[in-house]
Structure formats: structure tokens, C-alpha cells
Amino acid sequence: MSATITTMHTPAIANIDGLIATVRSVATRVHTFFVQSAEHRERAYEEAYLAESVDRYDLEFRMRELARANPQPYWMSGLGR
Image 1: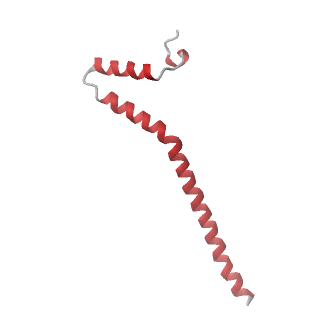
Image 2: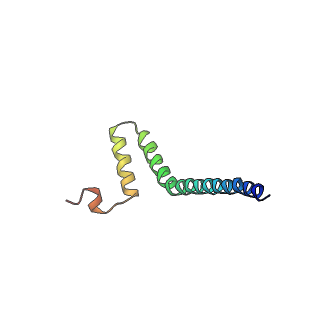
Image 3: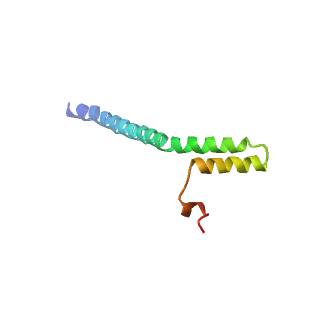
């Protein structure tokens, strides 16, 4: 009788381990989505905005506009020489 009890609990433990692994995997993916999505959306918006330029001058204007909207320290922009 104890053999049937042991075999009944072993698959349940394996199922719990699989469930824990699945929950951990889903939690990791959700975390990654929320962490990277803001940066990804901003980057995609900027690239689409720049892609709409009609000529070189418009592209340069849009690049300056984005640079003014998102200022960086002088040492990151390469203009502080």
C-alpha cells in the first residue's frame, strides 16, 4: 500500500516543479517586457520620425530637434571639445 502512495505523490511533485518553472519563466518575460518596452518604444518613435524626412536638410533638422528634446551631458555628445 505504501508503494501506491509513493507513486501517487511523485508525479504531483514533478507537476509542481514544472508549474514553478513555468511561473518563473512567465514572470521573467513580463519583467523584461516592462523594463525594455519604454526604451524600445522611444527608439522606434525616433527612428520612424527620422525616416519621414524628405531630404537631408529635413533629416538634420529633425535630428537637432530630437537632440534638443533629449539633452545629454557635453561629454556624451562629443561636442565639448
